[in-house]
Structure formats: structure tokens, C-alpha cells
Image (cartoon, rainbow, N blue to C red; front, side, top):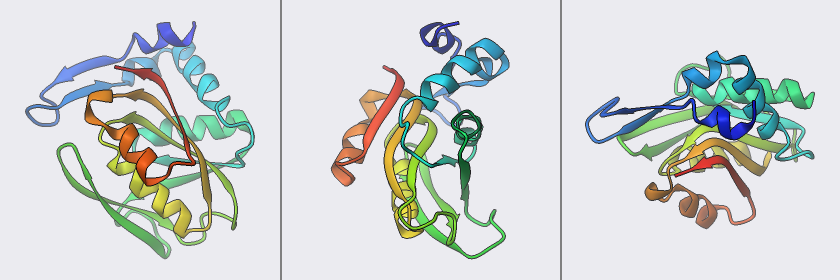
Length: 175
């Protein structure tokens, strides 16, 4: 299966988790072994020089951990507040339907680690901007961002590029 066919499996659910949000359900992609393999392979090829893959909770974990295995490198989880057992850096951010907070362990990255940052959907960019800041505070350098899908109308790409112009942003699907 090619990536374009895999991305056709994304299911759109209106008004979830609240009215006005069009949720992109990736579970059909994950449930199809050929589709999942195609998107993981494409995302793993994005930054051949990264030595760590960081994934954002929760759906970014799924792709990031599989990408790390495909690349033969480590995986670092960026979790919601209160989920990590050791000392953390924390960052609040806004998203299209509220405010949240994410954390990473203070020793998650060796200083200067080249990090491929992964999430499932790029919407307003708030989560990814917060994650970039956390990676930097923990000693890593985000070189590239890989997302399965980008909702262009919400302006997340512009927000990220204004915040961090040196980072390359890759979306397998944009609408």
C-alpha cells in the first residue's frame, strides 16, 4: 500500500470532542498493517540524521515509537502533566479547544541530540511549539517535525515556523 492510499483511511468525525472540532480518527490507519507500515516508513525517512525520536502524547507516541524502531534509535515520550515519575520540565499551551500542559524528563536528551519530533495531526501548532521548547530545555535540538496530517486552515505551520524558523516541518497529508 502506498502512503496516499493509507491516508485515505483517516476517518473524520465532526463535533468531537466538542462542537466545532472536526476530529481526524487515525485508528483505521493503525488497524491496517500495510497502511501503518507505509506511513511509518515515510515518516522514518524524513530526517535520516536524527538520533532520537520524540513523540507527543498520546497518538504521537504510536507513530514515534514505531519510527524509532525503524530508524534504530531511541524514543522519548512527551507526556501530559503528572504522568512522568521523575523530575520534569513543563510547558502549558493552547489548542483549538482549550489549554493543556505537557512535560518531559529533565534528562530525556543528551545535550545536542538531534531530535525528530512526531505528532499525529498539526492543527494550531500549540502542542508542537510547547514540545519544541521542552526538547530545547532538556538539551535536545529539534531538526525536523513529522506529522501524519496537517489542518492548514488553522495556521499551525506558520506558528511553528515563526517560533522556530530552522526546523523543517513535514506533513504526509495537508488539507
